[in-house]
Length: 169
Ligand SMILES: [Fe+2]
Ligand SMILES: [Fe+2]
Image (cartoon, rainbow, N blue to C red; front, side, top):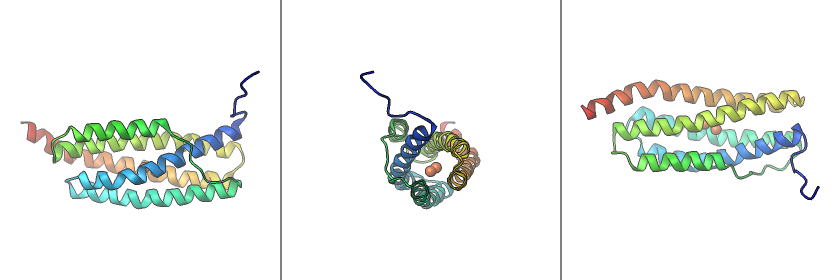
């Protein structure tokens, strides 16, 4: 065969996905201050700031996971997060400031959280199958943080979107 695939087994696949989410988290860290800046609702603003702190911590946790695996912590370009963030940015730019823009910020942020939940869910599963229980525990703690963030965004969306509806009426 002229071209030999670089991902040959579950271990390679796991490492590839770990590098993908490491890249994604680093992008998210750069984006969250902008989301906090654009949020009008104080709960939403605080929520983005809290998740910024959590995301920085998640990056450290991922570095610890690489360390346990005896691998260098490095990112692999994640096209999905680039696309999700770019689309969110365009959407938010098109919105009028206030409740409508806050609603768009929540919608865009939830797409990020769902991508993270899907990735960490798969990574946890693979880490367990590979017998990397310590790494699986680390990934599971991040997964729970992402799920909680998603739930917080859902609960905030109700009040924020009601305000946006009123604006339209
Ligand atoms: Fe994250
Ligand atoms: Fe997140």
